[in-house]
Amino acid sequence: MPEPEVRPFRRADRDQLTDLVNLHVAAVVPGVSVSVNTVLGDLERRPGEFITDPWVAERATLVAERREHIVAAAHLLRYRADAGVGEAYRDTAEINWFVHRPAASLWPDADRAADRLMRACLAQLARWNARVRYADGSLPAPLVYGVPRPWPHVRAVYERAGFRHTGDTEVILIARVADLPAHEPRPGVTVERTVGECGTRFTARADGHALGFIEVGTALARPERHARAAGLADIGNLHIEPGRHGTGLEHRLLAQAADWLRLCGIDRLVAYEGAAETDRLGLLTGAGFRELTRTDRGWEHRPG
Image 1 (tube, rainbow, N blue to C red):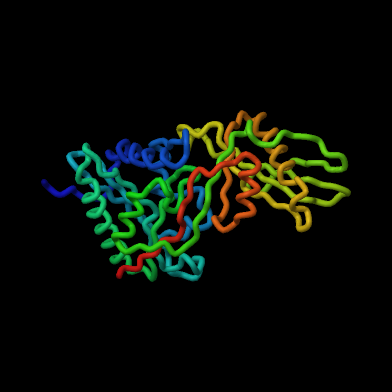
Image 2: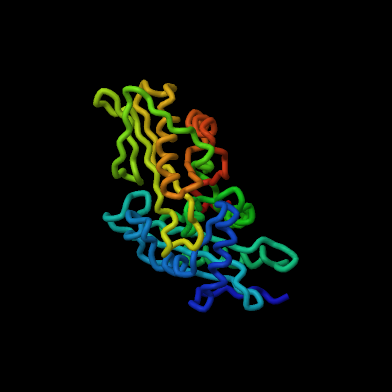
């Protein structure tokens, strides 16, 4: 059986590459897919990464082709080595994302193609001679980063190549807005709506003092970026002042946010928490959230 061909991405690959990307997105987030333009734009720059993207010095996209079908693809980044780059990123390189079709009757040699592509990725990282080599799975779709648990085939490729998980594990949770606590006025407590750091902020106040706030982002489904993400929002921040935990304030803020999301036509809300944050996870699950998946962030190349 002839070996799969590994080569640089060509614009004619765009539809097949987008199908492969969406195959992986769909296993992580229900009802979300990205457009061809979104994928092509991500290969040139990552507008959402406004801090780290200007630090990128070089980009490379490679594909593995089998019988004129793209069965694997990877996007690589090299970061500058000058003082203007954050220390953690300075003089590093990474596999920004790596996707491939799992082995199946239609693609019996998919694992072989993925390993062949990975060897090409490692060769490119070696040519860049970066100080450290990282890996991730940051596809241009909401909630898809790290190496999500629904991608055991990608995890296996990383581990066979010598990448090791050295970072944190995050839990991604989802709730139907209809299942969130109902909004009930509370005497002496008012809630104001303002522009927040990560979305629309709802701040609970009593006697002129802020008790806590929640921020929800409703821009996950910008039509020029995502073909299907309507009805999806995320919690950007949820903060309760010390001494106010356990007073029901968290549920009140979630109820206020849910009332606003219904007006926006949003029916699903997602949240992210570190796996070690058991109290926060308990609060969210008690308010109607359930675990969607877990994702492992921080992969470093440590062969042998």
